[in-house]
Image (cartoon, rainbow, N blue to C red; front, side, top):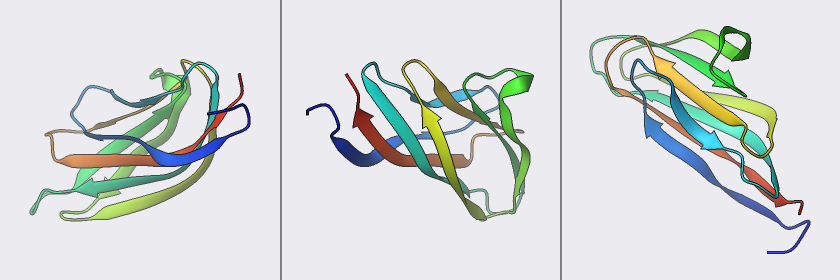
Length: 111
């Protein structure tokens, strides 16, 4: 790769739990634009609630507090988040381990 190259890719994918899971960490020498976040509740009978955070997991970093996903429900979140080296995108769910999150975006080499 060379400076200015832009690569569309899956940035991260994980099953959530009740502790914040890092879905993506910005890479040294790259600027990343997060374009979409897909969230799916695989539980067949119970709704789940998801918290999405950017640039850290503290209270001041919450983007979405209680995204409700009905049983077998899903959501697509369109974003324009920019992530630099060491910055993160994280998420957690209220209970259980049945929500899957996939993060898609573009990495651009800047150094």
